[in-house]
Image (cartoon, rainbow, N blue to C red; front, side, top):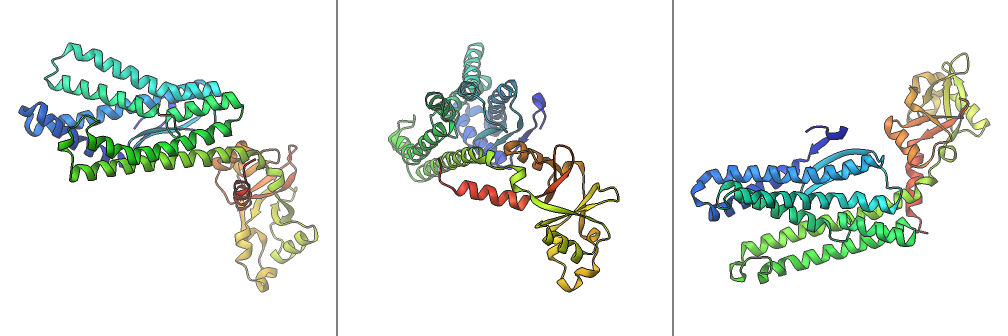
Length: 377
């Protein structure tokens, strides 16, 4: 939808479902407050839905600007079911920055709520502008309050994580605590929201509650609880991912390779590889410069009796600059390099340009799964 501050903004298809739901619910409320609007109330409600998500976008832009200020890359902003998310690619370096990064979103929602509240004094509350301003004030207050709840994946959970990180000096400890608080919040929402509505504590009268309203409240509670529970679990997995990233080193994951010329028969190339204890083949030109990598999947597809008659060049993938990886890369820097140029194999070279071997994405995945499966330290 645009690129504010250079960050692309996307709208998920689920947003249209929520926009339709907001239009329907807010339209019914408008019918009670402004009955003279007639069918036009749904047009006003649609405007409210768009304005509300514009407020959510401002909330996410606050996170984005703070992240960019701290030199943290932001992949994109996505507006989706029940809010939005700023996809920040790297973790804050300090707990203080993490706290600020999380707090600016709810803070800006509170500022917006205050702005809409002040604007209400300039209009008649019994008019369309008055009702819209009141609705936007309340909705931004709810966004701020909900996001300040102290459990991941909410902003309040990230603030709690930052506090525990600052006290213990261990970001993983903060993540575990905030994630489990988030799961407790999910259970509380699942069980508590229908009870609050049924008892009239959310503003409605108890005698108005029943039948379809009870079902809708339970469904809303289940959806919110599922979002919070899943987000908390994802936060735990991402934390463990970052904890194990330094273990992924190009040098240790690389398969040693032997150089072969493009006319070399596959059988002869494999014989040389076995003789040198290598598990990969790199095609070189007459000057010994690498030009291609013989794909492992292509080798497996050639029957053994045909291998003396198949040249390695017919099974090779030409090298691009993005497929050359330094043997010194590790962790997040290595993964960023692989993501930049998707491929099945990469040529790993020494700092001086000499061939070190071939890195298979399959080996990276296996190493990562193995690291993630180990108990936490």
